[in-house]
Image 1 (cartoon, rainbow, N blue to C red):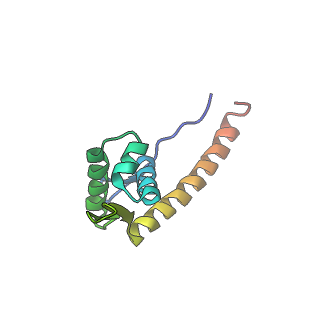
Image 2 (tube, rainbow, N blue to C red):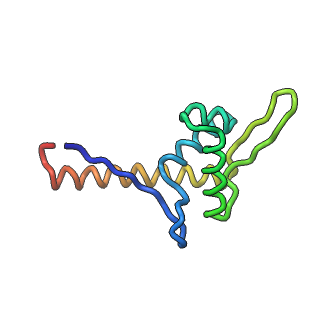
Length: 112
């Protein structure tokens, strides 16, 4: 037996705003400087990635990603300061929650 958990944050209107999938997507955008490269890394379509980002921005009321197009080097994307802050805080929250839940799991299901 092992502990598995799916967790996400919702807005006051019960709309999803942040979860593990969006965190991985935003981290990949930051790492690659590109939504299309991030989508490819995560095996989702560009349209799915862009839609997820836009829906989160709408539900949060903040801009998470800035894109720029064209030029000699082509387009790109990067996280806004608010996007970087959200990823950092969610990541820290998720790590702390995982540690606490692991401790509870061991307490209630010793030897597993």
